[in-house]
Length: 181
Image 1 (cartoon, rainbow, N blue to C red):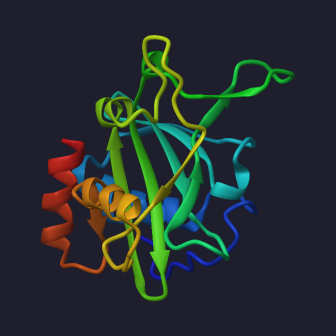
Image 2 (cartoon, rainbow, N blue to C red; image 1 turned 180 degrees about the vertical axis):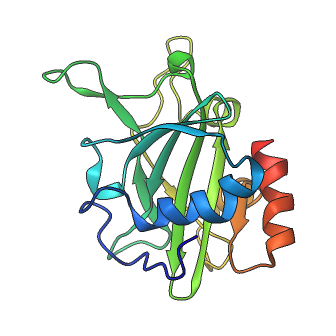
């Protein structure tokens, strides 16, 4: 286990984002010590710490949310490129991505959103049956205070999918089991 994590380091640099290492140590290894395979850093979306990996046979994506200067919450990209020369497009429900982990942090608060394929499809984030999804989303962790109706509505469905690392280990693991299995 890593003793100290600095999520404020730029996730674009280095082999593996620090927030991803903490996801492994505090969430995934306790669930299944040998479950993590095929870890690959993605060059596309590098500034969001993009990683693809397999966990217990499930195809997963990892991103680190990015704080922007004019809006609350954190911004994160979720797109693919079919070829090196093609335009970016949203992920499709049929791409086989089962889980998307998004690291979110502010000051001393940190945690992970864990979104399943079905939820991302239902929320029109993944493309499905000819309906185009989204190339990026904004996430709102539980500690974010919102006033805009749309942002509040989004936060309400997102926080049920959130693992708060500021809580006790047992609470973290209970939530991880609920969201990941």
